[in-house]
Image 1 (cartoon, rainbow, N blue to C red):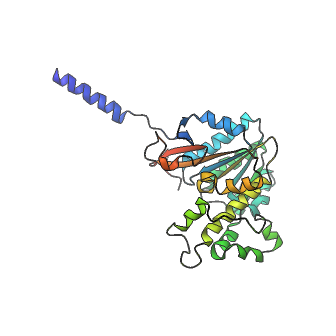
Image 2: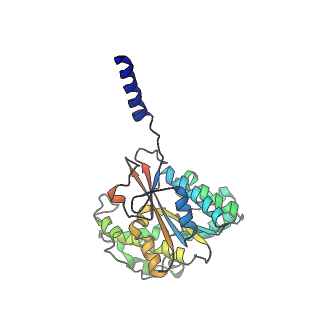
Image 3: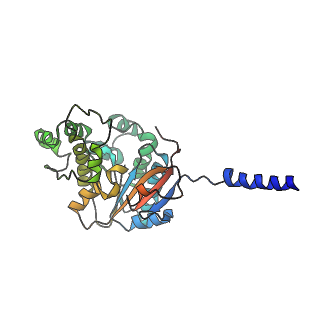
Length: 291
């Protein structure tokens, strides 16, 4: 009898510890309540702009970006526009040429300055846009100009040509150094070049990216269409960064924000992740990464 009882206890423990379902992600609203994926689709389809903050090496974020794009496309009968941090504004022409079927995939991938993880993480979005005839906006500032700001501040951009400035948000750029996202950068350790230039330039480089992405979003919005924009979470967490710049330009735009975070426990939203976005995708800390 004791052996039967002991075996029963062992079985119950085994089911509880080893038989638990493994969740690849959980979605919460900003208040920390669990929500279903369809709630996100419904919110996005009724918005003007989605700011989807990803973790660049997170496969779940990339998969959900594609799934959400497909589902919002269907929910809006194709009335969407795509845009992403991963494409720089001076590459818009070659991106348009590829989407329009004027150049080959091989030529596009050879000549565009694509991120190393393009083929696994962003190519599916581009190929979906191509297959559906969607507009895809290259929103980010060319990295060489962001590097100039990182080294010498906003004033360095004034020396650029008129053509070069066309790939950047109109100068001078409004800048609030007291925003949490920029103040936080000053406390980060191990920033490239730290100690070689004024540390106050680092958040300026972030701001010029945010301002340029926001500028390219606002000038490509279209009535009756939802703009889906993909970028690193830091660019829109806490409704700052891109979101702050968009609101300065178009305060009445209906914006939905998504943030991606990792936690050891995906069953409850950690206190530090409360309120950082309208929806927070929580992925297990041990999730495999794309690079």
